[in-house]
Image (cartoon, rainbow, N blue to C red; front, side, top):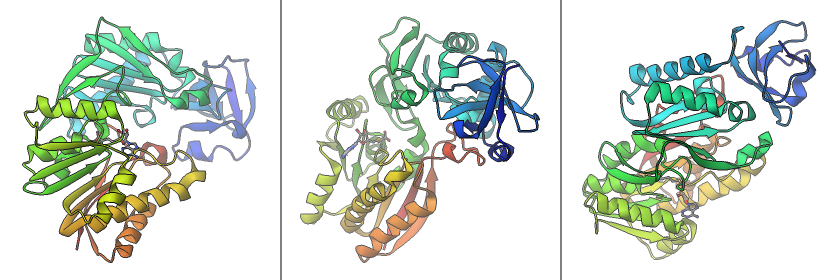
Length: 392
Ligand code: SAH
């Protein structure tokens, strides 16, 4: 087996349970493997640390898939997907739902592979070269396990550049328009799996819709960065007094409007296509008041270098939200920037409240839905953090 031999002392991360090998940690590569091939990972004393796929074009040069000496073949993929399914069925609230993330990359020990199930449609994302080269095999696995109507690829993610791959999308299997209707607990939505953001919907927020909606009955709700309206729809279904949804993308607003119509909620949600930063500033100046404000912005930084700028962004929107909340009002605030850890995020929100001369009470700490599992040894698997707070 071709091997990647690590430099002395560079095996600590793997021993601690992480699965990445960085280029700078490699002493030599033996056996002349090609990029994408399976390789053994060995420490400086030639001890076996696991097996994964090689990509010398990527800073993350090997991603470990297994700590056993086993073939990473179709049977391996089938087994890993079955393990992922069993976890969701047996140990999470996902149960036997028909819309959920089936495979979540490192968190399901399949680095670089994301598979979302949208009823009888499946969406595959290949984030690494190793996975990209095995797409046909993975499609076969999904067809055998689920007998889907269609499998759509959404590998149109900028991070593929880091792997030396182009962005790509299309239908891998089946004959489909890629437009599907999804039924969630309290509302349904329509999604275009080929065109909408991510793989179509933000499945990671699903449990939080219900969590936040519980506080919306009879209340004036402002949902910022609303995309297709997940929080706004849940709030309207929960009989909010009013719901305003703010989103910068025109197509997302159009879709959210359509979703409101689908759920018989036309007229119950006011949709505003605007930059939330500008609108929050304006509303603050005009002394608008809300009982519930939801802030679910896109990531403000993908790198450590940009943390300061990101923090300024979080501070600004949280400050405006806190200022506009009525006494006893609720703030549901999120960050999906992996580099903003829980402590940092909380401190920004606390700073914002202090500037607004208000006190916060923490109702609940929120996180990503359990179909986006977290491996404590792989911190990158935890990226969505939320706080449900009461403003006193
Ligand atoms: N809350 C949504 C997901 C939000 S994702 C849900 O649960 O489905 C973040 C959204 O913010 C994206 O739809 C993006 O188009 C939008 N967005 C990005 N920058 C924005 C800005 N400055 N103002 C308003 N919306 C913005």
